[in-house]
Image (cartoon, rainbow, N blue to C red; front, side, top):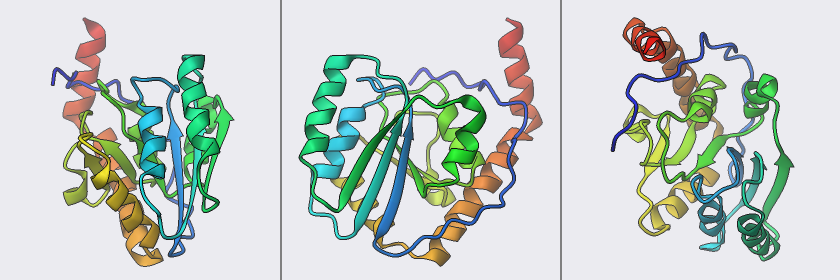
Length: 205
C-alpha cells in the first residue's frame, strides 16, 4: 500500500491510563479527530450511522477543520436527517494540547479514512486508552485479534454497521479490557527501540 513504515512517533506517551470510562450497554460515544474532507471519509462515516436502525443511543462528536465547505454541506444534510437516538455535533478544531484528555471522554475513535501514511490520531487514541473503529487503509491492522479495535474494509457499510451495533451492546467488563489493551499497545509501541530508531533515520534523511 506504500505506507511509510518508519512512523513519526510522539516522543513519549504523555498520559497515564487513569480514567475509566463508564460503558453502559445501549450507549456509545464516538469521536473523530481529523480534517473534514473526502480523504478522511467524513461523509462515509455519517452514512454508516444512517445505514440501519441502530438499537441504542449513539453520540458522535467531530473535531477538525472544514477542508471543503461543499463537502461539509453534504455532511450537514445527512446530520439533519438522523433519527433521535443518534446525536452528531461538530466541535470545531481542537488544540493539540488537549487531544489526549478529550479522547478519554469517548469510547471509540471512529475514522473510516481512505488512507493514512501513519495516522497520528489513531496512536493518540490508543495512548488515551480509547480503542478504534477505522478502515483497513492505514498501517494499523489486525486490530480485532489484538483486541484494541477494528480495521474494516470500505466495500459497503455492512461490517461497520455490525461493528458499531456490537460496540453499542458492549458492557463495562469487555470495554475495560479493550481500553486497557489499547493503552498497553501504545506504551509498547512508543517504547519500541526499533521503531524509535526508524523514526530518527527517517528524519535524518
